[in-house]
Length: 380
Image 1: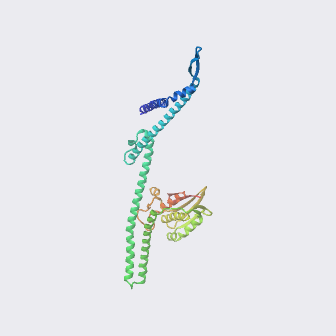
Image 2: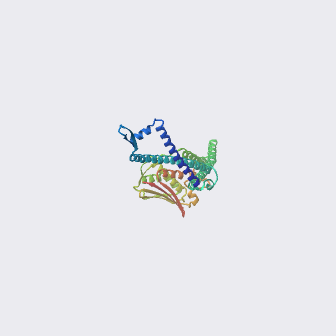
Image 3: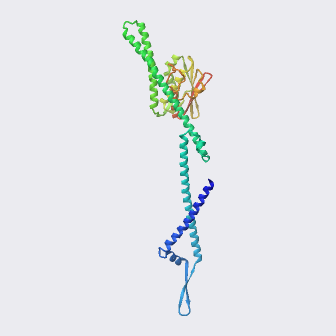
C-alpha cells in the first residue's frame, strides 16, 4: 500500500514538472511569434547594449551588440523565484485536490462499512480493516448503545401493553359489581335500610376502585402526550413540604403512618414549584404504599454548597437490587400482582426522574435492612 502511494506521488511530481515546462514553451511561442517578436524586442531594449563601431575613415560602421549580464542575472533570479513560487503553488494545489479526493474516498468507504456493520449481525473486525481500528471501536460502542436502548424500549412497550391488558381486564370486575348492586337496590324497593346501606357502601367502594383504574388509563395517556415545560420561580421548600404532608393526612391516617420533616426551615430553590410538588408527591405516595403500617416516614433536607438534598426514608420490605435498578423506568411496578393499595400505572417515579432531570438535578434510591431512601438533589 505504501509503495503504491509513493509511486503515485512520484508520478504526480513528474506530471507537474512536465506541465510547467510545456506552459513555459507555450508562453514563449505566444509572446515571441504570435506577438511579432515582442519578447525579443523587449529583451534587446532592456538587456542588450549597442555600441557604434566605425570602419575606416569613411564614416561607415556597424552597431556592436552585447548582453548586459548583470541585468540578465537579476532577471534570471526573478524568473527563478517566480517559477519556484508557481511550482510550489501548483504542488500545493495538486496536493490539496489529491488529499481531498483521498478523504472523499475514505469517507465513502467508511460510510459503506458503517452502514454494512449497523445493518448486519457481523462482527466489527469482519467489516472494518485494521487501518479503521479507531472507527471500529467507536461504532462497536455506538451499536451496543443502540441495542441497549432498543432493548429498554421493547421492555417498556411490553410493560405498557401488559399494564393496559390488566387494566382492561380489571375494569370489568368493579363495573359489574356496581351495576349489580345498583340493580338490586332499584328492584327491591322494600329492602331493609341496613341492607341498603351495606349495598350502597359496596357500590361506592367498587366505584372508587373503578375511578382509580380509569385514572391509571388517563395517567398513561397524559404521560405520552404531554411535553413538560418548566415555569421557574423562587420556591420555599419548607412550605412546599408542609403543604404536601397536610394533603396526605387522610392517606397517612388510613395507613397509620406519620411524617417528620427535618431541617427544612428557610431553604429555598429556583424551580417549578408545581412540578417539584408532583415529584415529592409521587415519592411520598410510594413511601406510604410500601412502608410498614404505623411506621414513621422521615423527610430530611440538607444544603451542600449550591445543591439541596431532600431524602425520603421509610421502613418497609427491602427492595431487591434488580428491582431497585429499574424502579425509575416507565411502567415498572414493584408488585408482580396488581394490588389496590400499591397498584398504579408505574409512571410516578419515572415522571419524578424526568422533572428532576429537567431541573438539572438527580434522583436515586437505596434500600437495605428494611430501610428505603429516595434522594433528590437539586441545584439551588
